[in-house]
Length: 364
Ligand SMILES: *Cc1c(COP(=O)(O)O)cnc(C)c1O
Image (tube, rainbow, N blue to C red):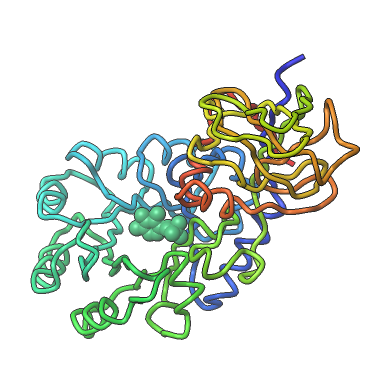
């Protein structure tokens, strides 16, 4: 028998979340962001559920090839554009739209021999200071692209640094709107957090939104809001089973470093999941977990292949009982990946992307 750990990708939840994001900006087209192998879910596994998107956005050229190989003939956007001049050949061959964020990418385009002119998304650095042309250089870049026979259409794009937090988007939005006022072309501004929290701004709703994390059932602004608040459903369940039960006496400790000491008699289950499965080692005693769909807690340190859980709230549980590390239990109970991530001082993004290769995955 294989080790009893399994990740399940919930196709219905992906469909639901995509529709939910569409409803946040009903007039916009939706890029389903499938970078990082669909946030760890697997591009091939999510493809069918996300085909209702208007396009797929990603950054790895091999991932773009995989989306085309699945039969997708609609738009694909390379969020970081070409990494070297010859990447443009693949863009021509596969009809990939690509971000232009720096002068080098304009040079490559100007030198590119193509029959089919390209659709590009010209990126402004409106304050994130990651990729894009500074506002004072943006219009010159637009004019250069506009003059190139290799370019068919220019869309305008920026990315927000604080759509999920108190600083918000207005400081960046103002710069973007002012700089682009009289430039033609479609706009793309919103990630999940912007689409959910700032869709009252017309510019945020136009013309292409780019949700990633919300499609995968994680709240972009947790703990401010959780997935229930945003009407999102978990799309990944990481489930395992109890491998062994130990009865502790007061003073007994659990696991490496004896980080947990029982102060009373305690029944614990040892479960088949550890940091080599992608479960964060930083989760400590108290991190929530579901046993038979009932909420309980981790005790002691996460080791490579095993974790101990407190069985007190589930006295009937024992060898073979279902354990949900995150996602949805058989009884329908939900443990959001965001809650587990918060216990590890990180985000749902990191946990889903870090699901380990050794964990078998099914789609339901
Ligand atoms: C990853 C990414 C997104 C999606 O962000 P989420 O926070 O996952 O919604 C959107 N736009 C760009 C440019 C990205 O890199």
